[in-house]
Length: 200
Image (cartoon, rainbow, N blue to C red):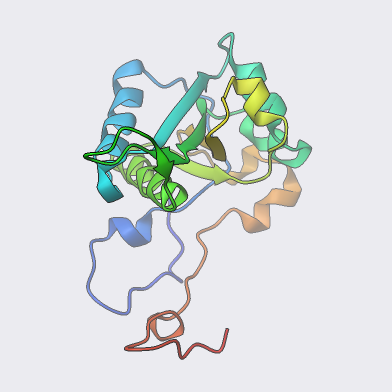
C-alpha cells in the first residue's frame, strides 16, 4: 500500500517507525501459525520492569470456534471492519508480581506500560512480516473478563486486529477518509529538559 507523504521524521530514525500505521482495511487472508507465533515471540522480548513480563495474549483466528467470542466484545462500529481481519487478539496484563527474594505478590504499577511495550513489539514484527495491526479500545470492557475467562488480578487492556492490508474500497464508505496514516506532534510538544514545561 502506498504511504501518505505527510509523515516526516524531525530526526534520523529507521523507516519502520514512520511506515507502520494502523489500517482498518484487510483482505480477509488467513494467517498461518508460524507467522502468528513470530508476533508473540517479538512481544516476548519486550522491555519489562523487574522482568515481570505481565502481558498475556488471548487470540482467535477468523472463522475459528473462538472468533465470535472476541468479535462480540467489539462495539458495533468496529465490527463493521474487523470482520475481514485474520485474527483478533486480546491483550491482558497482570496487576501484581512476586519480586525477587519475596514470596507474596505486590502491586505492579507498570503493568499497563509493560503490556504496551509488548503490543508495540508485536505491531512492529507484524509490519516487518508484511502484516498490519490496529489496536482497538472500543470494546465492552465490563464483559471482556468473563467472556475471556480472565480472573481477578488481571486487566484487559485492548483488542488487536491483525490482517493483510487491502485497499480502502473494501471498507464502508464512511471509513474511507480516515484510512490513512496519521501525523504526530512535534518533539518539542512532548520533550522537556529538567521539568514539566508543556502547555497541555
